[in-house]
Image (tube, rainbow, N blue to C red; front, side, top):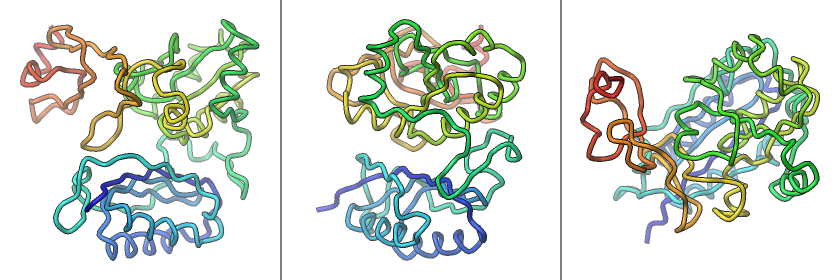
Length: 296
C-alpha cells in the first residue's frame, strides 16, 4: 500500500561544484521517480520532494551519504497521494536547478557560509528553548515573520510582526528603510516554514544592528510537531505545493479571512484572471471572483 510523503530539507555548506550536485540530484530523482523542487548554489542546497515512503528513504540515504550533507535536517510530512507509478500528486514534475541563492533574498554577496552553516546568524532556539525564552522575557519578545505576508494571513505566531512583503526579496529593502529599527533593542525571534529563510534573515538583521536576534530552529514545522495547536502558534501552515496548507491538529484555528466575503478560511488560490499572478486567501465560493472585484 502506497504511503505518500513529502520531505523538506536544506543545508548551508560551501559547494565547490554546484553543477555536479545538480546532475547528481537530477539523475537520482529521475531514477527514483521523485517530483518536487531542488535549488543548489555555492552556499548549499534547498528542496522539497514528494513520493512513496520507501523511495524517499532511498533518496535520503543517498543524500546523506555525501559528507557535507550527512547531518541534514530532513523534515517529513504527509503527502496527499501518489499515482500508480508512485509519483507524488503534490508536484507536477521534478525541477533541479543551480541559482545564485538557495533562498532568494536578492543579497547573495551578503551571505557568508562555512562548513558549520551560515556565519553571523541569529541564536538558534529549539521549540522548548523558545518557550523558556518566553517564560523569562514575556512581552519583551517580538516574533518576526520571515515569510511572505500571504502565508501569515492563514497562520502565524500570536502577536507576530508581519512585514508587508510579496516576495522574500522585499525584506532587504524594508530592513534598510529603517522600518523596524524600533526592534533593535528587543529580543527578536525570526521564524519561517522550515527554518531556511530565517537562517538568512537573521544574519541580515544582525549585520544591520539588531542586537538580540534568534531563529526558530526547524521553523514552524518543528514547532508544530512538538506543540501542535496547544502552544503559541495560531492557524494553518502555508505550503508551496498542491496541498496548499497543513494543520498540526484537529483543532487548528481558522484565522484567514476570505478576500471576497470575509468568511473564515485557510484556503488560498490564484486569481482566476490568467493575466494576474496575485494569490489570495479566498473561500471556495468566492474563488472565481476576479481580483479587480477583490480590490474593490
